[in-house]
Length: 592
Ligand code: FAD
Ligand code: SIN
Image (cartoon, rainbow, N blue to C red; front, top):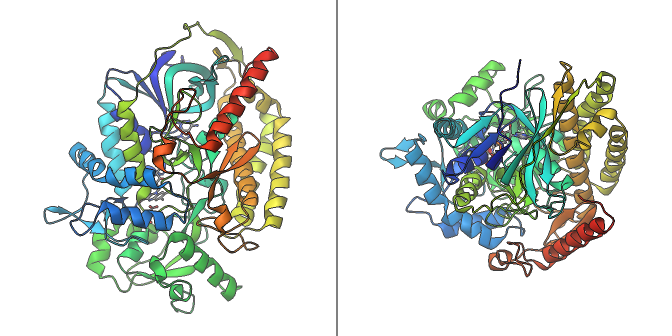
């Protein structure tokens, strides 16, 4: 079958169709032609799985200042205060916009209903039963499909950034779509590719969460930040054979509590806020408690006894349904739960306009590191971040293409990589286990270094494969028609495995580099938080840097070379280094 034609050029490309990508596409000026590229269906992603809700200080008893304070407290010293201020102050406008678009949040009488979640000092989480993400995503998809300036390209996998040889600016991407590899040019590329939970064997994340955005950006030379900080949600369904389906924190917010296999509550033994302490604290409490009660159980239990049956039915219909599918009647028995990897605080560093350290490349949503989550994200701040930062893109000004459009060359490729799939699938199977045991809830230098050695060895083995060589050395602007039926699936397996391996490497190295415990990063050999480490971890290529937590005013300043944002001393240094490298490469007659 002939491939549907994709235009060789858009004004803007948005990669990913979660809350961040969909909302960004809708906010971009309507005179711009937008390509929305997503690797599965439009609905697939963490956003549509979001349960608890979206945080906003809109109740008269609440204020953005309280929301600000709670976010900073959960973030354990690594939130960027001015960016958090921007988030909480824009929350109410974000909610209004969603309501105007038709998102049906639950109401109490005329007013929007709000619940409490861990580490919030007020009930400020708006919800739509326990399928808030679905309510938001369905509404946004409906709007996107009615917008003539947005073309959806799906299922299409973004493979690599397309950087300009001379300027280093991002000028488009390559994608795998309908058995073709194509290069699409754009004045701006917005990565909205979500998280990377699939790098861990126990995760609440969907299969598409393979960290592609971070891996692509890092390989392209972008600066990434705080990758060691992963949030482990305390309560994922834990039953043999069942997926790690999330049991929302809102269930604890409504009054459910944790018990061990003897039926004893234990959360208050670990923190004075008990079940509603920050997530990292509750996850570690469960981890520790399970260690103490081993070898007996592999899970603890969430008891909903204190919530009325009417309230359970009203608030958690989806949780009831999924638990029922796995033989659990939440009205009469506690739910078996344990922690699972849930949210990646780290990501591609961006300024408040969502621009990365590569000109023309933007990042939003979970793949970005805006600075709002610090070392530990406050519950329900993620959907809010997606909407607030995507909305800012309505101000995006693009420069016209500087390079004249050249016509693409065209080749065919039979792609016989079947014999190499065994190694790739073996790595795909074993890597998440390795990561769970070495970079999960409790980390140590020894385990991290062993894992780095294993991951490095896998990276070398994979680098030697013909399929990897093929993927990493695609010729820009050359369209490839794949002729073998399996080649597309093989390339996708390879691309996602390489991405998972790269993010595993970055998480492990960053976790080994940070010799303290803070937020989602806990080291059994360095259990204390250290004032010396109240700094971000910046990574570019193979270089790791410390960077201070800085006021927004500085962060948003223009650099001396006229490039936007990120004017921290560390960033200036990094940009100078990147510029120096580019000039040296040019001097040698090479280009990036
Ligand atoms: P996603 O929604 O994950 O979307 C990423 C998109 O990128 C997908 O469409 C994917 O297919 C696409 N993609 C990825 N790689 C590529 C590629 N290479 N090429 C093309 N497309 C690609 N947060 C809250 O604030 N409140 C909650 O109640 C809440 N509940 C949650 C429940 C669960 C089970 C999970 C997993 C997360 C929850 N979170 C919650 C976190 C929140 O849902 C996510 O952080 C947020 O939705 C991320 O949105 P996103 O648009 O950045 O990414
Ligand atoms: C949940 O419902 O517990 C998830 C909320 C979040 O991740 O913010």
